[in-house]
Length: 368
Ligand code: SF4
Ligand code: FES
Image (cartoon, rainbow, N blue to C red; front, side):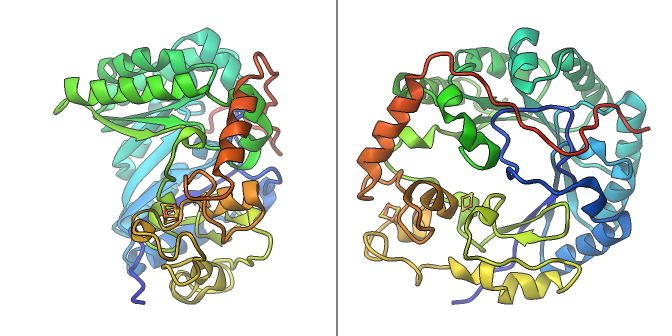
């Protein structure tokens, strides 16, 4: 097959984060601060990414504002010719820092929303006063004029706040909202009892999104990640493995998706040891599930195989124990019924306690 070049790169600059969201998709074992790539290495990686054909760079974490060199990193990315998007909780950003990011050429901000009021947001983020600070940051973002996407992460505890999240996106002048139902990867897997939406909530969310897309057409773009445990067909995860995007994690390891390290037989390479281009085109991990040759039945003879590429490899690994299996979300998977029953069992857990993410080197204060 002809391998396309990647269009987007997610740079997970650090796993440090002032919040402790129980749905965090970061791995359970996280890189410590001292193992993070330094500014110059990231700058080289950005240039290599641009040479490889990457157009959009998503600067993420953890909380990317925990990196004191964030402005320098944006400068380096812009010099490499990349479109830069900062994915942030807002905590750690000051007005001065945002102005510096603007001057450095930051193109876009994606602000996460843990809830639509302080009670919910601060409880879910595990950070008292976080909502208030986030609203202040949203105001500064509007004042500077950054194009904004609001990223509302929804689950059983806060799905009833979806209508308000849509209103807030409009009030903040966002052009886009990502309505993302929690995906259970990394730390989030520990919290399925606390966060799994009910089937009814999942159905209702889809209805609200469908109605809002019509009502707000031309004013607000709504991207929607449904609660896939309750769906009949899986998502096309990462746009297809090794097809359009790659992730570089804090220590320089390059991954086909953010949860790929949960697949134990894969080995990954680092930007310190090999060029990004070689890793993308020749790396064993990237070629493991690229295209359709690796698929077994029922995917191999399915008419949707180039639509969803068999769904999510990491979900197949986590639920079925085989990364090459059909994503159990799919109605054609022999594990689909068991997954749906499991989802209902998790969803019936009432007020199961939240297990907050723990991280090395927790850092709450903004770096100036
Ligand atoms: Fe997708 Fe495989 Fe299900 Fe077909 S059988 S819809 S390719 S996951
Ligand atoms: Fe890894 Fe979906 S998260 S393939």
